[in-house]
Length: 111
Image 1 (tube, rainbow, N blue to C red):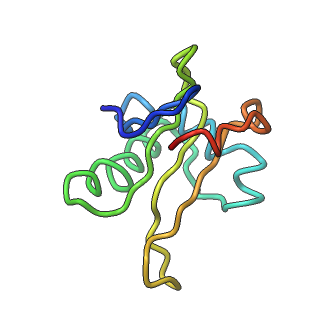
Image 2: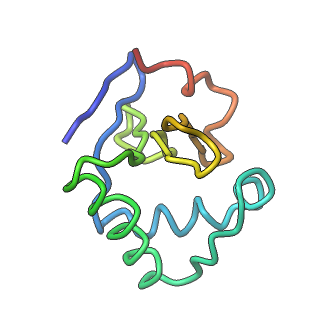
């Protein structure tokens, strides 16, 4: 399900089929260094993470992230969404991209 579109990317809801992609993204050195190590190291852990961090929040209307997809190739390139941080009163916008897709202006493409 498409949530938002830009000229070159779109956002869609995560599914369990995204486990391999998320496993790769969450274990990038840049993700660990700039966000944190979530300790997700296996396909099963990635699927459980999708269930808890994406599917359940989607179902109950809580802030969650979406998969950023490059429209021309239909390739998942990152995450973008709202995160409820314990130190903020309102949700915070956050994103992460696979290293090979950084610097292409994707983080400013969605309107």
